[in-house]
Every structure is written in structure tokens, then in C-alpha cells.
Length: 211
Image (cartoon, rainbow, N blue to C red; front, side, top):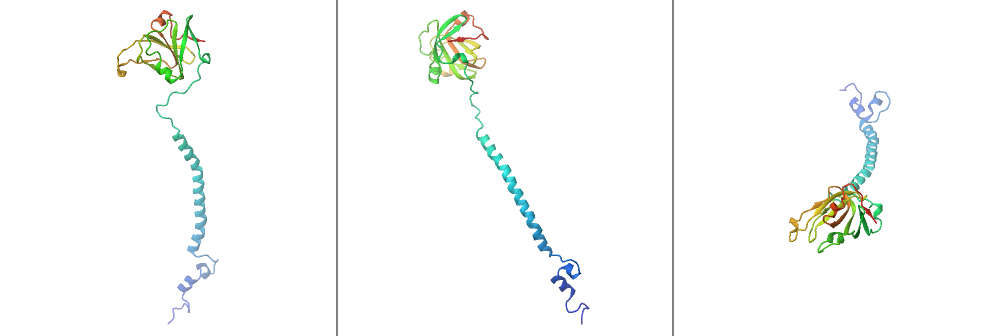
């Protein structure tokens, strides 16, 4: 008994020949082959886009890492300023309202730390000039200092920003010593015998001449 479809059943022909050929139309590739061929360009495009994205992002990551590594610590000192032109070289005298003072200069860590400590007296027209490389609030104490002192704080243009009187504290522990901090940013401090700042009528805003 036959099915009326000849010796080759239709469902077998459809599985062997492309569907369009069986119907007399244009030949069409099998579906799985078409998907593979269309998929290759898509995969290549995705790969190219991924590579381009990585190349664009990489420099920013590098720069970002370098910037983060260079973030300064919180306790970084203030920016350094160039000392006032009048302090080029090492000054020998300071002129305060017409009165000349001979100077000792403390311009490094060792001399600034020692200051006028352990001295029994200071000549009337002598003073010590402390020179700092940055303009900031300066703090002094009277550790091992035997004589009362006036301290004149000056900014980098040698303008007076604060004047204080410091008193000796013999035998006091470090934790008990008073701290004398400038009211404004300063690059220089001038120490002299206590009482002279008032006697010479020194005032905040005046400029000190160094020679």
C-alpha cells in the first residue's frame, strides 16, 4: 500500500533538501549555518569594542593610581614661600623704630631649637632672629630659658603680625610650659629683652628693616 507520495516520502525530501529548493524557490542555507555565519561578525564586533574600551580606560586608571599615590598626608607642612628680598644673605642688624639691634640668626633646626636657652643675660641692643622656610603660625616656649623675652612675629614681608612677652618657667616640666603662638602666619620671629617692644612703641602692622 502506498501513501500517494511515491518512493520518497515528502518528510524525507524536506529533511534532505533545503526547504526552498523543495518548493522550487531560491536555495536557502540551513538555519544553524546561517546563525553561525551571522554570529561570527557579531562576536568579532563585540571583541573589538571590548578591546577599544579597555584601551580607553587603562590610561585613566594609571593616572588615577598615580594621583592617589601622591595625595599628601594630613600633617603636610604649609607651602613654602620665598623669603622676603630684604633677607637675602644673613642679616646682621635689625632697625626697630630707629634703634639698631645686632642680630644672632637661627636659620636651621638646631639653632632654632636652642634659641636663647641657658643664657643668664642678653645685651640690651642684641636680639635673635628666627628664620623659617614657610609662612605659618609659629609656636615658641621657654624651655631652659632664664631671661624674660619679647617676641615679635613677622610675615614674609617683615611686617609685624603679633607681639608677645614670654616669661621664664624654671623647673617646669615640658607639659607645664606655656606655648606662645603667633596670631597670624609668620616667617620670622625676633626675640629681645622683655619690655623693649613697649619701650620702642612697636605695633602690629609696622615693618622691620633688616640689614
